[in-house]
Amino acid sequence: MATYKRPRIDIVLLAEDDEDDVLLIKEAFAESGISMEMHSVLDGEELLEYLFRKGKYEDPCLYPEPSLILLDLNMPRKDGREALAVIKAHPVLRKIPIVVLTTSRESVDIQQCYEMGASSYITKPNSFNALVDILKAVGNYWLQTVELPSSYSG
Image (cartoon, rainbow, N blue to C red):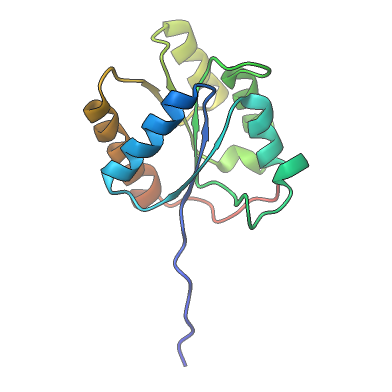
């Protein structure tokens, strides 16, 4: 007898300190038609609390493991570069793809992020339609095309 396997729901974890950008990114993903659930945190410190299941993020039912992290670089407390370094140094968390989505076009930022293990580096576009196109491409590739690890232990 065949067993029913619940379809996997992809979780995107957005680390972004600008609440307007959080709303725009959520709306753009919704507009893109990519099927996923999005959670957001406001800085790198909160991102690590989520991934390591600390504080309010202890419950994996409320804060499920992400399939993909969208990471801004310039955030308070712990910036995206610091969070990226911690995540990619962890033997299990390093498997989670991280797409840097930031306003910085600095070549030093681009190079440093790739050297630290970022999966992609994308500069935030100036229009909503361009953001929708970018997030549709990101979602199609990272959530629908590639095979990702099934889980981690936070």
